[in-house]
Length: 83
Length: 228
Image 1 (cartoon, chains in turn green, red):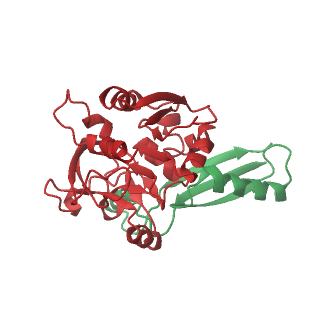
Image 2 (cartoon, chains in turn orange, yellow; image 1 turned 120 degrees about the vertical axis):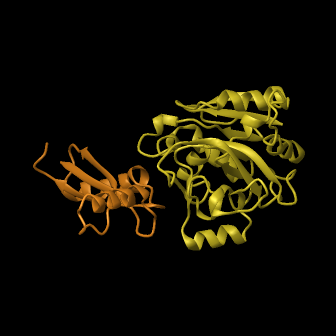
């Protein structure tokens, strides 16, 4: 089971990297770009857990270590085809 | 006063702290390895600057699970003093022993220079020698010192006198121009509710040895001596 986890800054927390990339894209002619958020992507390979267990365990991992919930928010998907 | 300097893999200001505590102030000081599980009757635990665990994931995110951190939490709960400097501050916020979080500097760059900070609350064991909104010149050296706290908690810690240091001009004016990293309301250092745990981004240990002309960092250690 492969957990694919995205960690990004919460709404309301200034993302200076995202802002800089946003203006760079605008300068390059991508005028339609209105907002850029930079975050982290992690893949965590799990062994011997069911999908419902994995849901619970990955959430715990995010709350405990992978995200700092004071400033960050996370979302993840589980891919059971990956062993 | 009995002091301990906690050494994590990647700490690099540990020797400076040890030197100042032991040789400049003559405190009974020893090393504490991060795998130790107790602090053995210390009065003050110092979490020094550096890059514990290479700052992987987030500064302090992995160090907060070092075995010694349980002992540091117990020590803090029982009223023992804890001083976290730079990476030590980052570890303390990650561990939840101090409020808020430290994010990448607004400039996205590592900032290394002298900064001026104004002491906002001299009624703590770390700042009792800094009355009258004292301004201190203290070096900063960090990439992740941008203090963030949500507005509700900001109000609470401000009302409770937990904001101890703010970046300012040499004259003590707290202004946007004097903010080196984008910290909310120029916050450079905070204490916990009980005021026995201080986290600060500036490095007082780098301006405390009389061999160097800048000695403002001594005020922090003199305050601790005064309270011991």
